[in-house]
Image 1 (cartoon, rainbow, N blue to C red):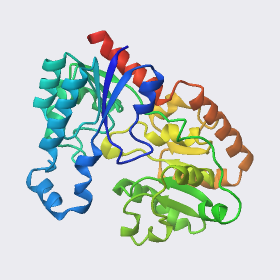
Image 2: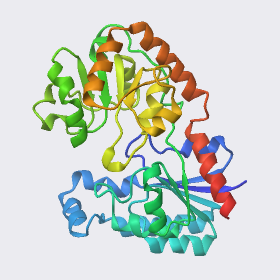
Image 3: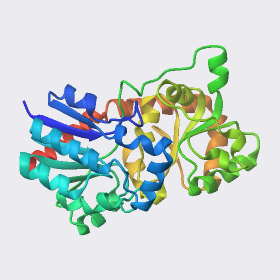
Image 4: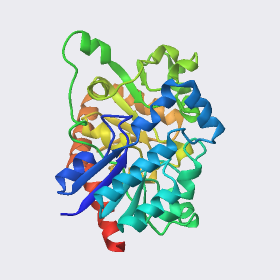
Length: 343
């Protein structure tokens, strides 16, 4: 039985860690190292927040985290190490894991490592240390190669069937709480504010915004509904007529986690028209797409008035995702297979 060391975080549970359940399903003997305990002080401690800035996006617990990770790898002696993002793993730690255990090192790059909002000194400097760099954005692949990436492959996000499945709100208060015409789950990025301005200006669309920073802008504050995770996320999607899937342009996304999660939850998806989305779904048959703010408003008005079309497309999108090897188990099999090829 192959041994797999997974490095991820429970900070965003139940969405992450992505591969912990999947590894067991695939039959790997697995050790999970959780990044979260080392980063949680950043949420509550002023000292840790100041230290993070002074150390140029390095947490004060970085050295302890790397020490513990190295010790775990030495004890476990994995065949493969799969790191999700790995923003605070020092290159020297990766080299020592490789030298001391002989493991094949894989990075599952959920973000653009060159995006200033995500980049850390360790993240970029660590790129040459991985045997396989699995990119969830095609647009970053050449930059990863130029930064020293050895074997650079493209893979996608996916969904977890334990978390992402159709669940309508119960009758009564729950139905009223999660009811909306249009729902968006995600942070208030600057380009998203710009895209949604015409939708807000329309004035007669019941918009539900879940995620961070929506209350900072007076135009969107009244639509903000806090955060929706786990069951609340499923209910918010199912309670809406239309679920928006917006990519992060600063992250050079061609698709996003929502690309698979929304259809897997049985919701009707209206997504940005990208090459990756067009390759995944038949337009107006398995998902609907838009390319401008005007088209977004037009598509929303059309589909709100055509419930049967929404239902048909949502059902086809659900089949497309759930029958198409898009679970995180499938993604783990892809990247470990690529790692085995370079071992």
